[in-house]
Image (cartoon, rainbow, N blue to C red):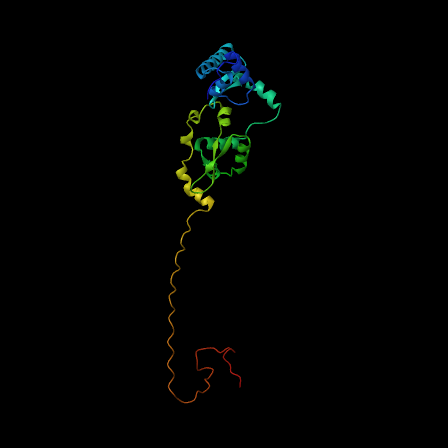
Length: 241
């Protein structure tokens, strides 16, 4: 981006005035285009201002975060600023939101299902909160599942005071590896391959009784004596005359 042909104002006061009214970090190129000074001079002036504020013990700092420069209140006055801004209201993220935000920060781009698997709970509501607050944003879709992917925003970097994700503490090794979650995720999403049912054991045919041989012709049957057989008749062994 080209700078103006003629500087519009004295460099350092002009930078202070612009940064004082900005609600987002401004990079050195953009600042240079506004004040009409070379980028190298702007960068040098910003660093000098930051060192001057720190040396004088001002109530604010000039910091380079998220690819730009912005004024911040000094950490030692955080309680005073918090009391003034919140005025008794609770505006901090819940523990659940902080945990979810941490997972997204270290595993991004990541889907909601994977964040839920890592935390062991459904995170849909928490993700909506993070999206609303501008800490998380959509980052395309997973090629295999088609699920929406999420990542942190530049506002997230700004809020925690770092320039890039590379400055995050080394916590990633303590989180579960994504490869170890594939089976669980597939099970949760109902994507497990259906198992073939075991074949039912073949029924063994029951042996058929051979027909009894027909009795040889003989004399007509006679009534047996109640005392001649070993069986008992239904009526107790007595016969009605």
